[in-house]
Length: 256
Image (spheres, one colour):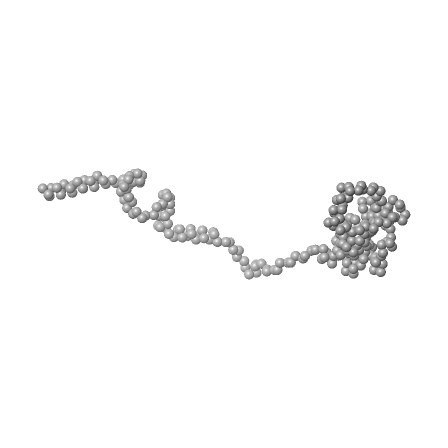
């Protein structure tokens, strides 16, 4: 009886194995169905640690790499050569000649003054010799006055920086007297408190009663070239001129 039971159990196990076997789920079978294997629960790959690929193209390229390693090595070399920078193959006599970069010369007002030639060289001589000059100034209509000063710097447009300047000019007399405690007088008073303005000495004109002569002294002033009418070098012995001996300014128009 016991032998019969053992035989029955073996037969039942063999039958169950035959029923469980499915060629579509066998990875080594020609009838293997991957879709069915994915959808069937409990199905496991024969090599669980195998590398996984996203698609068949990746798997195919991996297989080709293993089967044809020489082909892929050549491809790697071509990619490496493409990434390397292109170097021109020069012969020794074709190599560039090493040179030094030329230093750009500094161009400023002092360099230009030192290289001045022509009529402006007179101003250059006045700067170097510290000679006093007399500059006749003009406005939009006529000669305005003149300045006795020393030249510090100049340019080709006759813009000049002057020092120790004595300025003399003429203007019409003002008959209008501002009202006391007016807004203009208050503003002028506040401005004079902040900045000390040079005093202007006013004297009547000798020939014309409607004009007056103004004189003032400035430590430094910038004179624009459009206001310059004439430049004269004053004799060094006659530079220290008193204010009462300064000549009146001619009012004749200057021909431009």
